[in-house]
Length: 363
Image 1: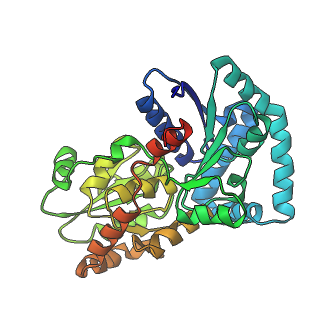
Image 2 (image 1 turned 180 degrees about the vertical axis):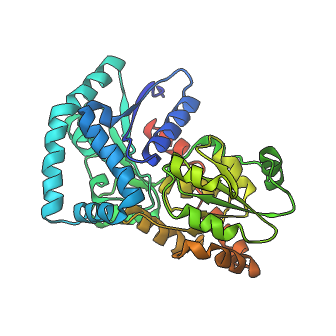
C-alpha cells in the first residue's frame, strides 16, 4: 500500500489545546512516515489580523475574566436558534473569502489529506474539497460542539464514547472513538520516583500539582494558598502564560510559568488541582492522576468535568480556597486509589497514532 506522503494539520490559536493536539498529530504522522511532508498551520492566519486578534485574545480574556460570556456564546451556538444561525451565516461567508488561500497552500504542497483540530473552516473545506482530498476532524474535548459534527467529513475522531454517541444520534456514522490526540511522550512516563528526582521534588512528601492550564486561568492562587498549609505536602504550581499569577505566587510555593516537560510533573504528583481542559485532562489520565477540578469554563470544560467525574476519575472542587480539605479527604481512605484506576481506564495515550493510522488507511 502506498504511504500517505503529505498531510495538513489545521488548528486555531484559541487557547492552547487545539494547537497542542495538532502538534501531537504532526508528531505521529512523522513517526509513521519520517520522509513525509506535514503542514501545521493556524487557520486564523488566513483571516485578517484584527479578526485573529479578536478571536484568540478574546477567548483568553473571557476564560480568565468573564467565563459566563464564553458560556453564553458556546451554548447559544451549540443549540439551534437565532444565535447559531447567525454564526453559521458569518462562518460560511468568512470561509468563502479566506479558505481559497488554504486550498492554494494545499495545492502548492501536494497535500493528500487534511485534519482539523478546531471547527473553524473545517466543514466548509470538507465540502469544497469533496472528491479531491479527504478532510477529517479530531475532537480536543470529551464531548463535541455541533459545529464539529458533520457527515461531510471523511471521518471524525471522537474524544470519548460520549462524543461518538452524539454523532450517532444525528445519523453521523463515519466516526470512531479515538480519544483526544496527545504527544507521544505521554505513552512512556517516568516512575514517580524518577520524575521527582528529575524535578528536585522530595520523595517522602505528598506532591500536589496545581495548574490553570495553558493560559493560567482559574482560582489557582486560592487553591495553592490552601494547600500550602498542609504539613508533609509539597505544592507545585504551573501558571502557564499568566505572568500576573506567576508574580503573585512565586513567594509562596514552588512556582513555574510555562513548562515543556509537563509529563514529568504529572508523573511526579500524587494528585492534581486543575482546570478540566480536554488536552490537560487527557495528559493527566495517562499518569493515572486523581484530579480535583476547578473553575470549568462554561461549555466544553463543564462537559469535560461531567465526563471525568461521572467516570470516577475526578472530583469537582467548587471552592478552591478549601482545596486542602478535599486533598485530606482524597487520601483519607481508598478514594485516591480508585480515582487513579479509573483515570488509567480512561487514558488514551495512543490516540494520535491511531488517528494517523486510520487516515493512512492502515487501520
